[in-house]
Structures are given as structure tokens and as C-alpha cells.
Image 1: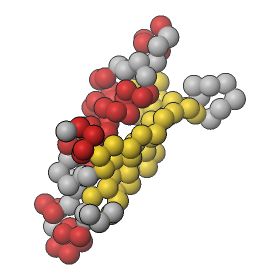
Image 2 (image 1 turned 180 degrees about the horizontal axis):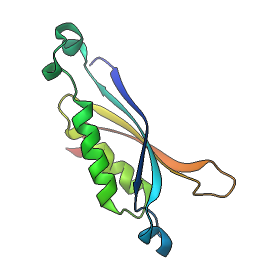
Image 3 (image 1 turned 90 degrees about the vertical axis):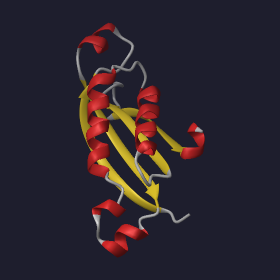
Image 4 (image 1 turned 45 degrees about the vertical axis):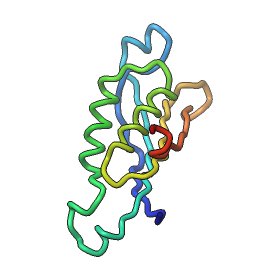
Length: 122
């Protein structure tokens, strides 16, 4: 398989995430970075959207999920996003980083980064 990539960088959303009472009531910033791996040759040759991985549609699904999910851990949210990514036509692997800016004192952000492939969800 060719290792072509689509990069979605610094998607800043707001959602409910965390274990503390105040985190369950007040939306927080959630910073998401995604790398989608797949074979992009057909889209590169044809210049047709139907041959491409539709990252716009995928991003809309991710936004809706993050705004509605109310997860307790960044790990769970990252796994949700990876599953959404892998449901998109043509995506073979997804690398997902989810961060909570300002979650730790003296740190710009804290987060997790995971990588999943289609075989992880067979």
C-alpha cells in the first residue's frame, strides 16, 4: 500500500471532557490533529473529488461528535475519532492527537496520540 497522507492540523473545538464536576458542566477547548493514510494516486491522476478521501465530510462528523460526546478521557475521545476516520472511504490508517490546552499547570497542553488501522477494528 502506498503511504500517502492527508493532514488535518489544529482543529480547535469545544466540548465536554474530563472527570471533574466542573469539566462535566463547562465546555473546554479541545485541540485535534489528524493524519489520514491511504492511497491518493487515483485522485491525483483524475482530479475528481469522487476519487479522493473526503476530509471535509469527515471533519464535519468529527466536529459533531466532539460537540456531543461528553467523554471522560482524552483516550476515549481519540479512539472515537480514529474509528470515525477509518469509516471514511479510502482511509487505511489514522493517527489522532487529542489535547486539552491548559489542563496542567505550567504546561501549554496535555494529550494523547494514537494510531489505528482498519485491522484494529475487524
